[in-house]
Length: 354
Image (cartoon, rainbow, N blue to C red):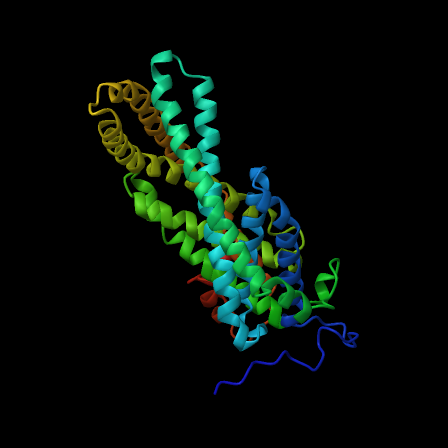
């Protein structure tokens, strides 16, 4: 039977720290606690379901916790790894679908208030009705996932396990060499994944690839945020840029979802009208609004993609990603074989950074 992985020293997180140097698991403990505490703060608001920002904030906190549990998996008891990840993942997914629906409703409400012609109102109103009905059902999924998390006492277990971590405000020089190595490897891995989708920015029709790039941007962003304390003020631009990439690619993805959702919506509505009225005369009243909204989303997608291409070219001109690699490299201890560090960080020629 696989033995449970132990933290580096007995009572590491509950006893006074004798050494100044902060270990990997001490650093991880702070991330775990901060994220789980952030989730706890939002629980009551999420349950009430009245303010969409509670959903948003808990979703972000759960993503950060999932990222940390993945990066620092060796600091998590073996028997708890899968259970914690699964419970947090299930909640994140429920929150994500709910948040996406909230955003869709807000968008439609805004568009409805600014429709150029009253003929478009019936279609947009019907869309809003169906999305609000969907949102009500999704709230039940959120509550079920939250109940499961609380029943298993995941957040309480994390709090009890990692109580006594190093407080924020620690001097960057106190972080161990191992933390810097893990940071460099983790960030480089996420950066490589993100940049692997750059080739697909040449054509707006790569719908799935752009969606995967959004996911990679999200994973890179949260990994950067986890390790930001050990690079004081040196990751801010990279974090801001990946947040922009995640947001814009997310908006592009939303437009793509509408392009598949609307035809299906029309087909279902037509069947509903036929079932309840015995004819589809009133269904025709929905078409102008749906067609208007679909065209609106197509135009918005073109605008978003064009602007993202421009932003990407600017990042490349400013050597944003190369600067990030240099930051990671410069934080590592001197090596007898410097080229090995360049290889680890994805830079083939060390001369390129000089």
